[in-house]
Amino acid sequence: MGSGALSRVVTGKVMHRRRHPVDNHFVYPVFFLLLRLDELKDDTSLLFGVNRRRPVSFNFADYGAGRDPEIWLRELLQEPGVNDCGGPIWVQTFPRLLGYLFNPVSFWYCTRPDATVGAIVAEVSNTFGDKHCYLLRPKPDSDGFSGLRAAKQLYVSPFYPVEGEYRFDFNTNFAAPRVKIDYFKDGKLQLNTAIHGTSRALSTSSLAAAAIRQPFLTLGVIAKIHWQALRLWLKGVRLHKRPISTLEETAK
Image (cartoon, rainbow, N blue to C red):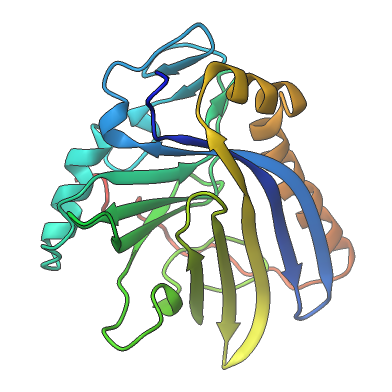
């Protein structure tokens, strides 16, 4: 975390509103990291470490194929023929905090040589250890990364089947990043989610300030998921059986 680092720490909020079959809405404070991968090779301090035990850490094993994420992503982009993203890769993610991590979704921003974002990989995880990656590319006539659609492929919540589609909207200005995801089934809006915040340069002081305010962030993520699931169950929302799952083919 040198003085010239471009990586960011972001403090903000996550919002979740389930619209069907019952209304259920919550907003929680969070912090997350925006890391430029080529800055992380040997980045370490007493507070933050890469592939090291530290109070706050980023570990390759937590993502993708469990190895160097830049190599994994370059290979992932080659398969569908994405060949214009030769610039730096950034990741928006919760850190491993006090040794624990659950990351519902991480976003990998793959840039072109001119520093514009050319593709985004949304790496979604569920509480069963399954993952799926959605490769998102702007259409030539679209307004950047707005209104991007992807068919739902992963069992995420027991209250929704593996049907329908996601619609993604991104603000790729890293000073104030924002991601909005709407879930539709049978053409009807089922769920709104969003995560947003304001960023500061990643440094020991900025990271310490965020971690001190929310020392149990990642434990809280999993606890809140189960708390909200209990609320929905008590409201009588129908459960959908988890299909026979295969761990995502991202582990190539």
